[in-house]
Structure formats: C-alpha cells, structure tokens
Length: 415
Image 1 (tube, rainbow, N blue to C red):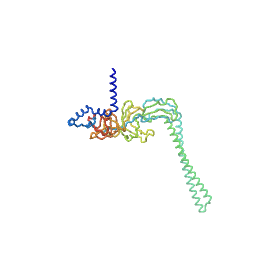
Image 2 (cartoon, one colour):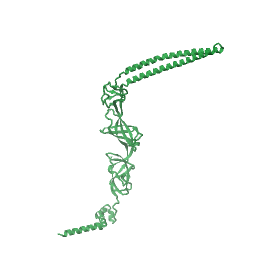
Image 3 (cartoon, rainbow, N blue to C red):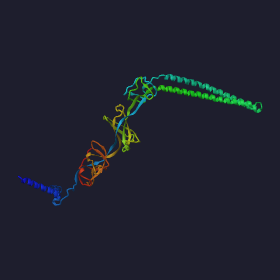
Image 4 (cartoon, rainbow, N blue to C red):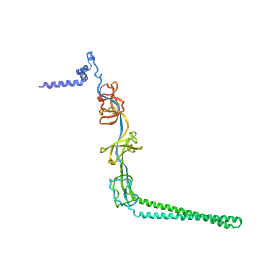
C-alpha cells in the first residue's frame, strides 16, 4: 500500500525538475505540437508536399473591418441653461398717499397702460387750482410792464429832444451850461427808467414761467396717483392692498413678460466661435417639452470666474406654457462637419492614452489613428479627424498593434 505515495512523489519531483531546469525545452516542445503542424499543412498543402514549413503568420491576424465613408452632419453646441422672462419689473410709487383701488391678484394678465394702483389725491387738486390762479395773475402783469416800457421810451425821446435844444442854445449863447447839465441828467434818468421797465417785463415773464412750472408740477403729481403697467404681462405679486400707505419707492406690483421668453446658457471659450447671432437653436425643457428659436444675443465679455460667454435664445411662448426659471438643455446649430459613424466599441486607446481607432492601410498593416468625438447617438458615435474613406477594424483591434499584418474580413456599414 506504501508503493503508491512513493510513485506519486517521484512523478511530482520529475515534473518540478522539468518546469524549473528544462523550462525552455518544455516550451519549445509545447509550441511545436502535432496539432500545429496539421493546421499548417491544412492551410498550405503544397508546402507540406514539398517538405517546406510555412510561417504561421503569413496570412496575418484575422480581424473584422468596416470600410467607412465620411458624411456631412449638422454640428451643434450643447449648453445647459434655464428659461428667463423677457422683461421683469417691480412697479413702485412715485409719490405718497393711501391706496384707493381694489387689489389685483397675482397671476392675472394685465395690458400695457392698465391701472394697477390708484392713490387718494388729497389736497393735490387744490394745489393745482392755486398754481393755475398764480399763472393767470403772472400773465396779467406782462401788459402792465410792457406799458411801462413804452412810457419810459417816450420819456427818453423827450429828454433827448430837450438835451439837443439845450446844447444848441448853449452854443448860440442863449442858454447857460447849467441848463445843458440839467437836460443831460433828465436824459440819464429817462434811460434808467427804460431799463427798469424792461426789468419789470422780464420779471413778469419769469413769473409766468414759474407759474407754468408750478402748474406742470401739480398736474404731474396728480398723474402719479395712477400707477399703470409699463407693458403687457402677468402679475407675479398681488398689487398693493386697499388703504395701505405708500411712499415714493414702495412697490405696487411685480410684472413679468413671458412672450417671447429667453433661453439663457453659457458657452465655454473653446466653443464660442461656433455660435453666432441669428443661428437656429432648440431646447429640451426639464418636463420634456421641446422648443425652437434663434440666438438673439452673444456676450463679447467672458465671465471672470467661469470664463464662459452668455448666450440668449428667443423663443415664442404665446400660450404662456413656459415659465421663468425652468432648466433647459440648449442646442445651438453650428457649421456642418464631415465625420464617420462608428460603433462605440470600435474606439480604443494607444499607449499614450489617446482616443482613436485601429485602421488598415493598402498593405493590410494595422495603424492607430487618433479621432475627435463629435456626438454620441443611439446608432453609434460620430468621429472626425479621419480621411474621407478609411478601413476601420471593428473586431480584434485590441489584439494588434501598429505594423502588424492583418487578414481582414469586411462587413457592410449600417445606416
């Protein structure tokens, strides 16, 4: 019964000896097995008959390949953004007073110019009447002042005649110098009277202007009592409650305009050259709705923190179904590019970690070519930076390297 363990130990020792000390001979024996020789003979019967041994890699490594032709596809810049109201404003009071109108509830649609809040006029009508009375009084002073100017001019002419006569008589010896001096003084007094009369006219005209300004101020103060919507839109808040006291700057209501609505996104500086004002753009909202519009604004100044550029797309929203602040995935159409549609499994990495595909040249030699991924779709991936026509290895690309001969089996392109 002890002979079996002894035989087992001897066999194990012999196997260990072969593995450790005769490893090279053992591997050579394993590689030149009769099965391999039979495969060589089957692949090349004429060589077996002549006694020549053909190399096993003459036909190359078997792979599956696809002959791909580039196609032009529409390119797009994909942005993450949100919806934003075209306009939003908080309408505030410009004067003080108690609210005398019933409030409008939020969510109501208001037209441009529609009254939102009305304040109690108080004594403003009396102030307007007083300003108009002062204007009438100021206008009545102007004819009186103009009459004074006419009288002063007449006095100047009379004094001028007396002065000329006194001078003439003095030259002929019929009047003394005292008379000439007296006539000159009368002339100066008449000239000063004209100046005073003109000043009175100017003062009366200034009084008219001041009275007109007071009337305009009183009228404008009354106009400010009615707070109206600056544009058509939806009330985002209730208007001011009846009886509440409003001061200048107190909010009456907030209005937003949702038609049209804006889609706002931020494009990185690497893609900003692909976006232009007027380009067609579409978006998919968080609820699944899809909308379409055009780019109406592209910022020329990058954000200091993110180094991105603001893009605005204007979209029609006649039914007010799109709200302000919804998340949106925005696609902005860019200039088309030529690309190849390949299965995602075709992509591989080279030793440097670059993304690319294994291709076959005219001599059936495998070559790695880097690619740029444009778009990922359900049918495959669109890649560029490849020639117009290319043979791409789709199966077996992970088992060959650059310079290895391959034996390709071509398949038809899908779609």
